[in-house]
Image (cartoon, rainbow, N blue to C red; front, side, top):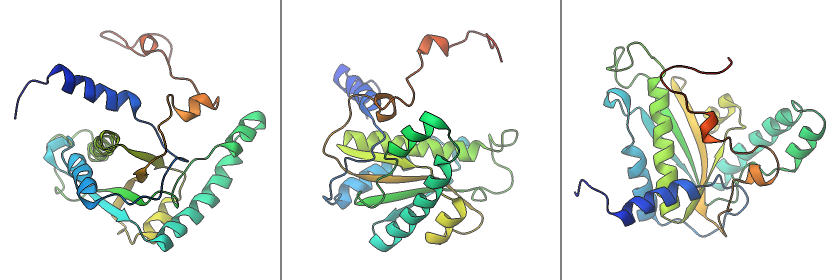
Amino acid sequence: MEEDFTAAERDALYKAIFSRRDVRGQFRPDPVPDEVLTRILLAAHHAPSVGFMQPWNFIVVTDPQVKSRIHADFARANEEAEAMFDGERRSLYSRLKLEGIREAPVNLCITCDRERSGPVVLGRTHMPAMDLYSCVCAVQNLWLAARAEGLGVGWVSILHEDALKQALSIPERIVPIAYLCLGHVTHFEATPELETKGWRKRLPLEDLVFRDRWQGGR
């Protein structure tokens, strides 16, 4: 394997990063070929993990009944979430499409087995959440690989964890990290949908970078 990236390879990586979107309403029903799904999962499996613990598992969901069960829980959780906002914020929230569970041909649940590497893990001795963060790296790898394959991904976090675990027969000790919708899409938005719909804007990088110590308020 070549150690250095060519200019074209470097540009392709940045293109995947900057054009990645959280997809909700643009999924097409076309199936995802097994070889493509395998490449994406392999990319996720090659994510960095503290202590090389590799605490993840990947549950591939294509059964419409399972999707419907999870979507029903989303509907309940989404109604609860909407009630947490007030006024115009609640009105805007009610108009947002926040999932593609039934439309996406593939759903994926990425989980964390916190016991896989034993009670003492290199790199997790003083920051016990590093196994959870490692699984999030797998999510990001998967998302960028999917974008490079021309596939959209949507992260559904408005779910009750207990209901999700029951629907997917996830053991008690296993932690669900991300429930993702995956598939071909009609298009990718030029900017994040929550930004175009007026929910939030991207923060300026210069406001987020400090030097040597925390600067500013709290």
